[in-house]
Length: 328
Image (cartoon, rainbow, N blue to C red; front, side, top):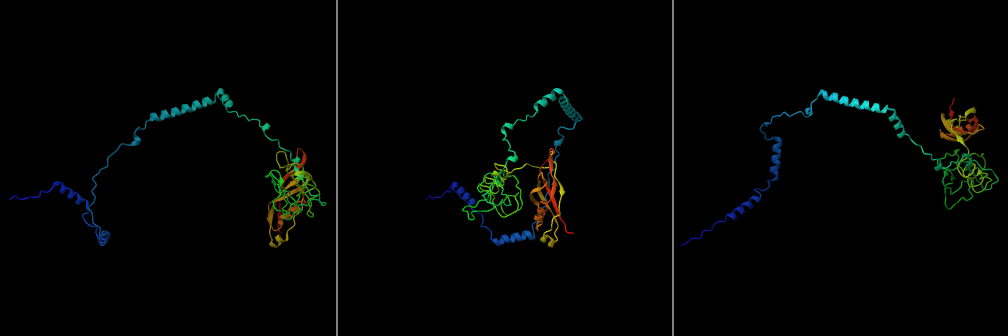
């Protein structure tokens, strides 16, 4: 009677061993064991044996001493630099080289006069206006200059309720500083005080002229000229122009507000002294308030000056004056 004995396949055994190795050997430990182990390591850490160092330092070559230091190298470098400097000075001191350098470095300034627009004389500029009023133009503040004029200035507005409100302007360079008298109404800065009036001129504007400007001229500018801008040659001291000097002055009066406040200060004014020695176009550069600025302008308008001279002739010169207010 024969018996049947099962023979194990070695390949199947090796596969089972391989699968067993892929499985985790044990399940993750409980959290309380992990906490216990961490606390134990903090309170009573395990002592390790001392570290034994078996390495030894090895001497290496000095990288900075690769080429060494030789006296011959320093002498050679000094000789090369000396020869270069000597050659440079020798070349620059040669007359031929100097002439060549002058010809090469000469600047040629082109004549651009034919391409530059001719500047107009200031006395030709100006403007005027009015609306046929019988009264002369009233004094006031001139509007600023602009390149276009949509609305001419007016001391008396005939249409109090316009559909489109625009700020009045004069035609001229926008960077030109206009004479200012710190008044709140439009008018001719050089006119006398009086009731509001646009003047007997025509074409809009203010004055006895024509053209939508201010003054006795024609055009949208300011002054007795025409074509826009502002008339009159105004010089600054220097360059052959002497500065005006004070010939007669009066002390300014104190305002009631400043007197009650016992306030003292200095007002800085910008003025133009005309050939007759009178101040015009007075404006405040640095004021102190409390009514003292107006009192300073009122006093300077009564001063008399020795006008500035250009080529021996009196001209209008711009200057600055200080008016001091001191309580005794």
